Image 1 (spheres, rainbow, N blue to C red):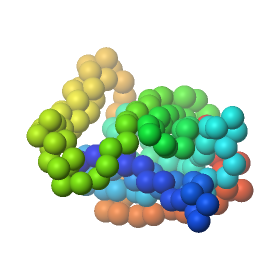
Image 2 (cartoon, one colour):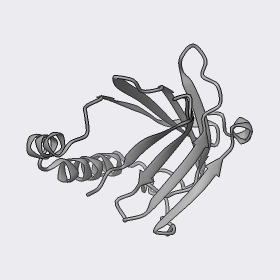
Image 3 (cartoon, rainbow, N blue to C red):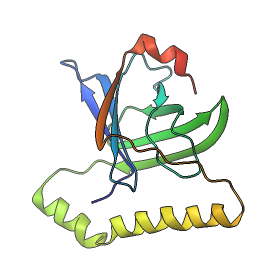
Image 4 (tube, rainbow, N blue to C red):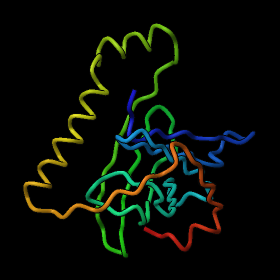
Length: 163
């Protein structure tokens, strides 16, 4: 199953978010996990950043900076992602979801309601890539990344990656 971004919240003994894991996957079967220390939230919003280290698109370079903004999840979650290259914005997106109890029945319901989600996501990515290609957006040479790798970012290291 393909999922371009999975987000995991690591909570401490006081139920505060202590770190967030952003698992980024590309359509080439490569995956990169960024484990980022949470730091303090401001007005209820957690802002994090890290250097981009995985080739995810033929239209963006492997290097860049991710910025993540979210309200730590409760009954719902909202997560924003921004990508910058050489200090310039390249991509800005967000996704949201509602909490449901994890059970066999809930998983079966999701699979039945969205049976072709992986195909839909992969197709949408390739259709968007074709649109960019038809518009004449130049391609970036692909480099091969490890099949799976992890980077750990401490809160104090995020200052050099503001997005």
